Image 1 (cartoon, rainbow, N blue to C red):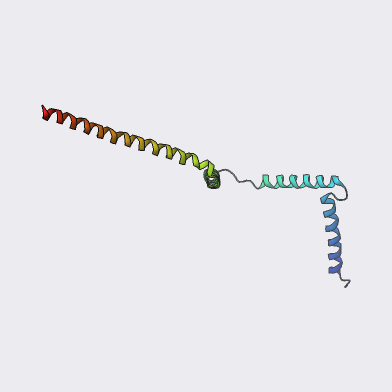
Image 2 (cartoon, rainbow, N blue to C red):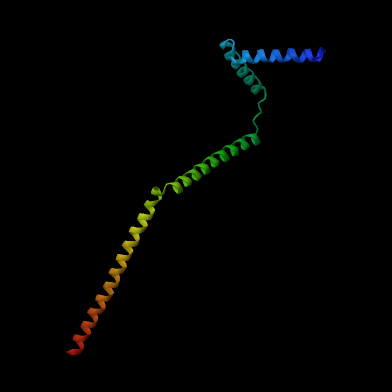
Length: 135
């Protein structure tokens, strides 16, 4: 191993990083982990305050459009999930099949009654014509 200034700096940097990670993770003292977390939150809040954008009409409209797009995407996702549930669960969709069957049976009965009515009406008119011609 060489004893140059560069290699000495690398070794010292590695040791400092290892110690910093041990303290940051709370492995040596648990309070250092919460201290590190609070420091990171404070730093993030300080940076975000200074990086704000002044509201303009264009920014406001863009934010509103983005929010509406997110809502539409969420609704579309909910519809897709509902369609998947309906395709996977056939018992949910059988209600419409049963109602279609009931409507079909009802219409068939009505058609049969209409045909029976025409048939009986034809028989009655024919019978009346036979009495009228015989007298």
